[in-house]
Amino acid sequence: MSAYAGIWGAYLPVIDAMRDSIEILHVQLYNSGSMYGIDGNIYFQGTVDFILSQTEAVIQGFNTAGGFFPGLRADQIAVGLPACSNAAGGGYMNPDSVKAAIQYLRGLGPKPARYTKVGTYAGLRGMMDWSINWDAVASCGARYEYANNFNSIFRPSQTLNLTCLIEGFYNSSANNMVSDTIRAYLRDTLSPFAVLDSSKTFVNANGLAICKFTRALNNRKYLLQLRHRNSIETWSRSSGVTFTSSTATYDFTSSASQAFGNNMKQVDLSPVKFAIYSGDVNQDGVVDAADLSLIDNASFNFVTGYVTPDVNGDSIVDATDASIGDNNAFNFVAKVTP
Ligand SMILES: [Ca+2]
Ligand SMILES: [Ca+2]
Ligand SMILES: [Ca+2]
Image 1 (cartoon, rainbow, N blue to C red):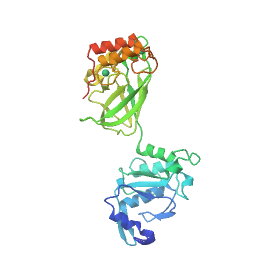
Image 2: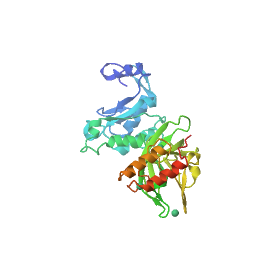
Image 3: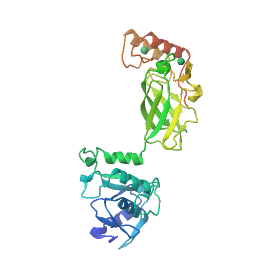
Image 4: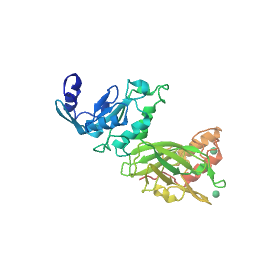
């Protein structure tokens, strides 16, 4: 505020001239002592009020000795803070305080300190870490404490509570299945159904899997696509899945219609359960002679272990796997996608 040029204000005309080209401007909220807010009060580094007042000043604009400096858009502004207490001479703040300040500015949290904002900045761009080197140091705060705080603020995890069964892995007498890894993809609802997020997760014996997504948004519909190492790729019904308050639930096992095109197999009468088709060993979207050949070869060679021709998950490739593949090939089982 004291200058619009010279050693105390030299950046301002440069920023003003480049305002249309600037992607991110991170204001240095450390090693800076105290500063005025646009409310006329003085705020000190290392406080929640400092983050609030200085971030809002650069968005709203402020008077200087050389005239008014118009602010930048909120989506151009990041909050720049020390990664840990040793990373700067002053200005470090604990992660919870940083989060409280940023969430208030974004309209996602209550007023955390004395400063009262005049606007809400849902599009606030992010945080700048001074520095990533210091953030990696285990002896100065927790390792990657600052980066993790950024993730918790700007990339909260969305949780999908997923239920699915794998035909060959399921035991209808025991009503459970061999656990295995699957991949869940969130796809756009419109062609070409772009992959918008993905999660690699573990399906337990009851068919339950917790999928964590980092980019998924609340209140937006996604199609869900499942992939498993030797099963037919399977998609959700067209009504898809929607996260509310960062949580969603989807159950593929309750009815064939839970899969796009009813493309699942009933694997149990009591309780009634449906599973994704097994036997696509080469993952080309169809169960056919090519898969059967892979199973037969592995079976002939007594292949064991975690291998894709093991269609029932017992870590042995034998006639049982061939039988599952044969049956699905005979029925022309193939993927059905939007
Ligand atoms: Ca049963
Ligand atoms: Ca195949
Ligand atoms: Ca097997």
